[in-house]
Image 1 (cartoon, helix red, strand yellow):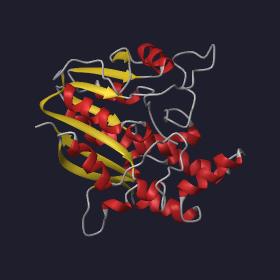
Image 2: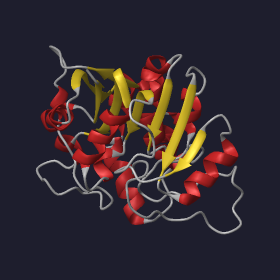
Image 3: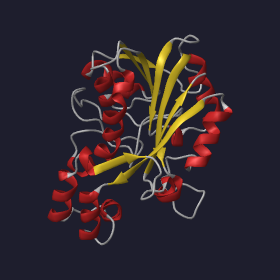
Image 4: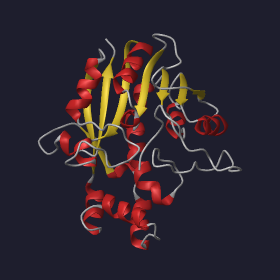
Length: 269
């Protein structure tokens, strides 16, 4: 139910599938254009949309770009965009579908970029897949120019795998809460400027109530059953848009620990 590449092998596209067709779902990344995946896609897309202006006029690396739709969105405003992924099929897909992205193959534990070579590193829904998270964050700091930004999102461990340190998603190696993510970034010499959370907005709260208290659980139960989706559930899932999510920090009405996903904005001093 999640994201992009880690520093390990990935499933290939089925032989003969056109490169401009949607990529196969693997459980590690979300892709556009799949009705049953729309909730997860929009939940990821909202972070790109709300933070993309921080990439305006800058040289950007998206480390773990997966299908590439986010890197292409960033290319609307950035001076340049490098995409990096370990999955060779993803690399081929992005090169064919999103020509504005300078797509490269590489391991996130050893970023194939020079020191101080980019202004922004984007890393959305990836860190939870990595075995050596500290090494990766150190690499992000290395390739950032002074004053450069690391934009990172990840599922909130407290709500994604409640009551356990062992991720429920078999593709995740280590999930983080807000305090742990802050510690990870600061230990690499970055300064955390903001810690935000993705929350369900008012309409998604209504959909939660309509589907037994959680539209997420309703989707997961259908996926695990490997059965056709009820028409009402599929209609509600396909109707979800980025405006149905809130992206905000802790406040009187919102606790970051209750968020669905964490979004960190960190700067290299």
